[in-house]
Image (cartoon, rainbow, N blue to C red; front, side, top):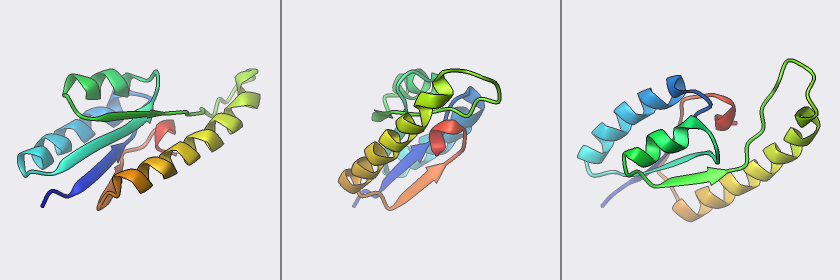
Amino acid sequence: MKHTIVFTGGGSAGHVVPNLAIIKKLIQNNAAVHYIGSKNGIERSLVEEQKIPYHAIATGKLRRYFSWENFIDPFKIIWGVLQAFVLLLRLKPKLVFSKGGFVAV
């Protein structure tokens, strides 16, 4: 029986590339792997190149400078948490592995 494992992390390739190395080994061992990430982040193209199922969710970012987006991002984060929750209920993974980055929240 295949076990489902969900990966997340992004915002930079530094969070994604280590995940891809682990994913490669898991797929060789017959695991069903899915990736949850942002709609426009670098993780999407890197993961989709590997033909791994990718699920895009809304994400927000903590900026340490003034930006009008800082007022909108809390709502994006709440929406993304709800989207991730529904995805996890649907996928029913045995394990969730988060490498980090603002996407991992």
